Amino acid sequence: MREGVRVFKWIDIPPAWLAASLGVTWAIDRLFPWLATGLDWLEWLGAALVLAGLGAMALGAFELVRHHTTFIPRRMPTAFVQQGIYQLSRNPIYLGDALVLAGAALWWDVLPALILVPAFGAIIERRFILGEEAGLVARFGAEAEAWFARVRRWI
Image (cartoon, rainbow, N blue to C red; front, side, top):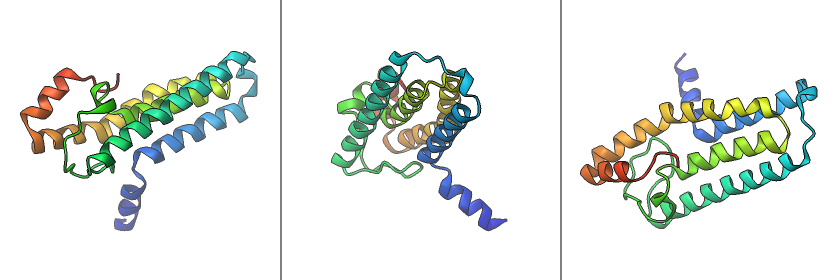
């Protein structure tokens, strides 16, 4: 049992949750092809959301690397990053994940899979964001709390 817990902790990371959600989206597409709308513009909108999501992820990771702090969930940050995209969103990488998921559902024309986006957001918030925010307050105190008041969690 101990080994199973260790394996789950290793795979309990946001990219794994995103991959699982994308897998469910793909499965819905394959299992229920008649749900497709056939609207070509959804593909373009979906592609734009995927690109926006990848951009948000890249900008968020860039700022963390630039400030020599971790982007690994559940690790204590060594610097408090409020610059760049972190002026717009406290969680641009997770926001990017959600945009990629929404974009994929549109791109693949699997509109029912859009229900996975708020579910994904809730999972990420409960499993990662709340703990990360508590860690920021423990490490940076009032500075973190002021940032929380100023910048929204998602957008």
